[in-house]
Amino acid sequence: MKTSEPSIAQEVDDTLLAEFGMFTSLPTGFRILNYSKTKEKADAFKIRFKEACKAAGLKKLNKVENQRRQIERRIDKFFDKVGA
Image 1: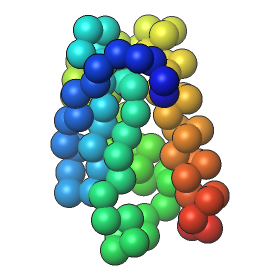
Image 2 (image 1 turned 30 degrees about the horizontal axis):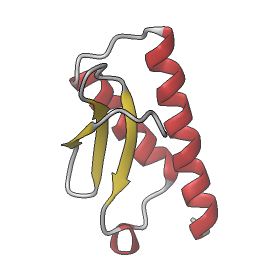
Image 3 (image 1 turned 120 degrees about the horizontal axis):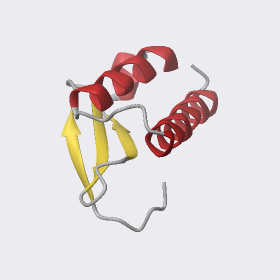
Image 4 (image 1 turned 90 degrees about the horizontal axis):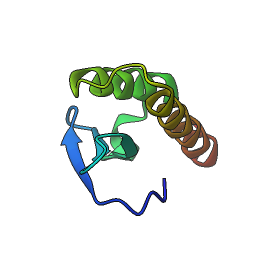
């Protein structure tokens, strides 16, 4: 997300890590682990990322929602790139 803020990765499950800013706690990115083995669809990752944001206690503030939507678009781009 190029926020230039250090981030902390929070494990959502065996295949998804959600990243949150150390100071703002806003979502800053994601990591998909072992994608070639799981081959899940983008929607499944977006749902799990939303759940991770809720679990982190993030409320639906405009800034949080905007960053979450940007991350969802990046998830879509990733899946478009790998052809899933």
